[in-house]
Length: 469
Image: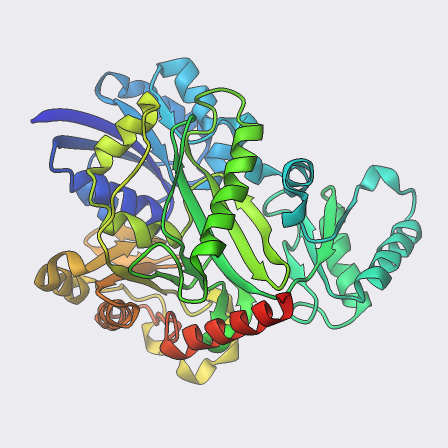
């Protein structure tokens, strides 16, 4: 069996799912070299070499790649930060190791302004109404306040505030969710404005779907649609998070979508790709992980990311029928034209620490105070995975191995992927795995992919389509 070495740049369950898919290869003996944000217990077990780069510094990651370049055939990158900071450019230039992610110039996730202007040029119909506020255009706070309030008049206050750069200031804020008055909105705006340009765009009503596509630079291969749950608490309450869970159906579309919705999404992304692609390599990987919202006026794009989704890629990789190593080689060769997946539904549920999403402050009576800071026990969940085979996957995320114990860190701790012949079957399997995880005062949303939530989405979309007519 041919031996293949793969560099995986890891932060969280997304990269763990990649490591899992690689090491399940039927055609290759795979050696994994992991540059990790922390001592992830899954990666430590699977890797032949593991290094912690806590800030995901591209120079340090590149140094690790250089030290092992004779044994590494290609690299995969999970988190966005190293992609935005030009990891691919650096590693390929210094080591010759081909990397599966966009180059720095085409990591469009780095700028929400660049995204909106690109879409305006190629597919203007997918943009909500928006206005860019740049600090260099205003001399005083009063001047910019007047301009912001004038734009709010046009939007009737139904606005979303977005910083140009990721993780600048307070991030995205939504009218009705994060602020109820113009004063609150403007305060949020200013915390972002001090770091650079800010977009204020129209808040639009609809149902969200996540679109992902593998790309070899020449071809886009769309993956099945997924639905992410951003809000922290049940019934879509609480602050936005990195994603508390997600689901995909047995086929390519979600229950509230039609085949025509899917075709429109594919057409939109292909138009962007064909017009924008600079050559045959710069956009390889998953350059289009697009957050669509389906409205009464058709699909709009909320944002585009330059890497796999977390949790959305965890819905896909466990049910990939093709050997993932072969898929990667085809991406590098520029001849990936299709991938085959099992006809299964998948549901991802995250367990997270008590401070995540402000849970401990909102529901103090539900937190097991005696468990805070204690180790997290995954043994029972892994035993279920052994029992059910490929129907359950347990992916440690923001976890750290200390001696022989695993501890939750600050972000999403661990996710369980349930696979089934229906969404409900997959959901129950995922929840069974989640409930088997003990310790750490961890909690989870109980309504990810619930029948009630899905029915509500279906009815909402039916109402929006009636308005369309």
